[in-house]
Image 1 (tube, rainbow, N blue to C red):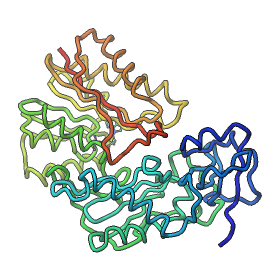
Image 2: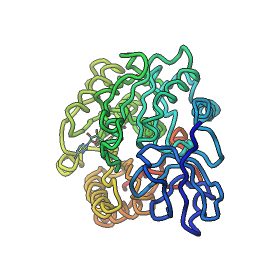
Image 3: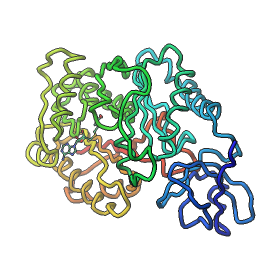
Image 4: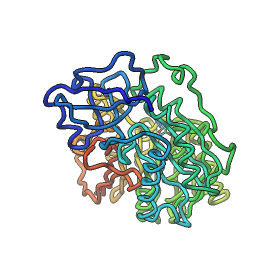
Length: 404
Ligand code: SAH
């Protein structure tokens, strides 16, 4: 076995990896070996030559993503153990064998000690998104591990890394073969079952053409809470994508549900899912429209709203703009909603933390002058775990508001 290349940190920069934070920033690095390529596995050492961790190297501000803090040989059995560990955790919290839910996130990057890797499980199909060249290179090991863990149950593995590697700050330099040849496709099996169950609701998932890995699994528990408040209300599901919130609201007995998204493809998915669960239900209607405009014109018709926009900021320098966006959007909703109305409002921008988001909502409320009670703060579910050593893993936050 070839020796693993060594990266040495500057004096005093060993604190972060010693506290199990998985990112080594380029500013902390004193010395890198020559000829290192994006995706290479490296070992990180302190200036006193203490071993600190093993990870994937990539040029950029985060230079190493550590996947082990113990000296290991990163072979197939290592990856299998890591993935088995993620699976066991989900089994222990009741996600892998739930008869009403067969869609969940199996691996959530840093939260599962696997920076750069996301795997979602859709009723027999695993959809992989890698966010680093290093993880992209582990595809064969990951495939092997998934097949062993799930056995017969796993029908297909689809790799959707083209989008995740191309965006999310990863620079494709075409330095390596992998980067140049990047394309989506099946790593195992093919065209498998595309219908899943979430808390007993049916959803058609299009991982090939849909957004992200195909579905926003992270809203599973928040959808349940929407169902709690929906009976008898006229609900506006803004930024509805595949109609997750709309479906829960309808099945819980909402009086009416309007689903809005600016994407035609998203509205098509919503329509498919509404029909899948309710046939032709006259209580629901879909609109291809800009949510800001729709709220500006129609907000006063509703006594319940879900506001779940895409990330307004993907980087720190867009943070201020994002906060202003949340404020403007929520001011439209709060201003318009009927007295006694309920608003579920969300942000999935990682760089806007819960305090900043809370501030944006408060500013929106002040702008309208209405009296508001906070019923609940919302977050991401346990299959998107936040490592206590990596608070940056928290990205989804929401509030439930009662507007007098
Ligand atoms: N609520 C959804 C996920 C929303 S993802 C769920 O539970 O599954 C964000 C959605 O916002 C995407 O479908 C995207 O097409 C849509 N979108 C983005 N900009 C928009 C805009 N200005 N108006 C309406 N929809 C928009």
